[in-house]
Length: 293
Image (cartoon, rainbow, N blue to C red; front, side, top):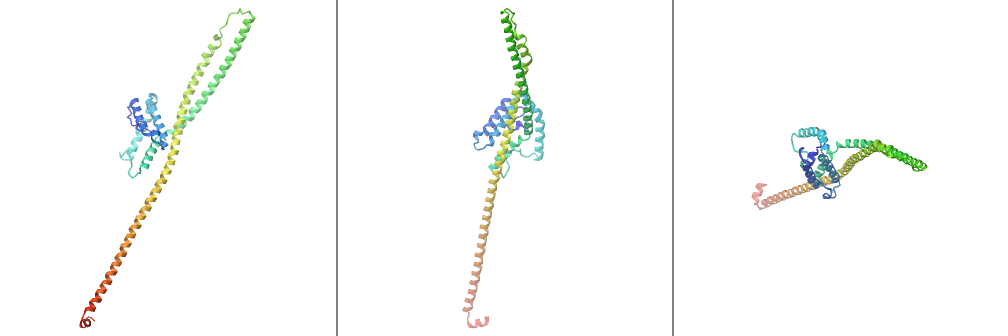
């Protein structure tokens, strides 16, 4: 499970004000308006805001601490053991281009939310069923209330006619004693409770739907960016390979040229030596020539 405190860069004992300040600093870095052209920042910004909202709410923060703290400690121990106590996961890796480093950090933030997505999808199904059930109950209560209202109107009209026929001398009957009072006591209160529950369920459903939607959209954009980045890096590697080959060819040509020059020099020296020998022979006296012959 992702560690909200590490993402926002605050200790687990941070107060709500400290969490808000840390989120504001983080929001200034990743806000979509300051990263024009980087569409993935929108989802990252919404995710960080959701984390902040969870940690500043005492009830939600308590629930998160009970669920996530053991998992976060286990994950931290596993990462430390796997790297032998080395650099944190967010540290820069040598040999990466700025584009690769930026993408790696974004992908890491994206992967932090991946374990949460199955639970968010389950929440969507749960709140959808709950909301449907509550809406059905509210509709049933509304139908009953409408039926009772109709009966009340008919009863009032019947009493009016009876009083009219009696010359208006009948003792007035308060309709609330047997209609409105009973209605409010038994049904309206329950209907209002269901409506409040339905409104809360709708908020939870919308929140889970938004989390899943933006996470999936962010993943789609990042996968596309990954493909584009791989193509760019592939072209860069191909260009580097061509440059290395051209450099190797240039070195080879220089070596061949040097060898040809050396061969020519050796040949010229041999010719020069032969000419010198001929000159030496021609300069000798006839007796010496005979001796040499």
